[in-house]
Image (cartoon, rainbow, N blue to C red; front, side, top):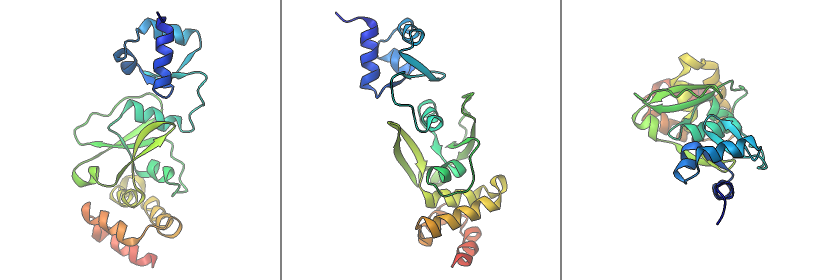
Length: 200
């Protein structure tokens, strides 16, 4: 018969070396076993409620992994999504996420997050699921992100939206038609269109 520690380590290995506490408990791992593994240095705490094997390759994007695991409904948006797509000169100092309206903002402690509430097509359209360090992360595609930057230009600054538009169309090969598609969905075509014409 295998020991609880051996079974717990096997569960970690089966799940890519990383588990949320609630998932570990659902797999039958006792909290005492988790603490024993943590205290012996075999697992480390990545964030509140998230543990990973200590011999696992370090995450390349630990902030994004933490947000994806702690807030599975979140979609990476705005400047954070631009940075993910390598389409901005801005350095995000917080992880910006989209959540449905009337959803309470989660409190993570670390990393710092900023919640933007979306609804309807603005929430559902343009979402891609990508794998970051073995964890599924939802992020808006680049054309949708550019349009969202125009939607939130009063909070982010028009310069962020213009830089995103320039980088997306000139450096990343995004077609104006793709941006117009999302601008129509989000009902800001009249805002975006003059800037698109100016880019030509």
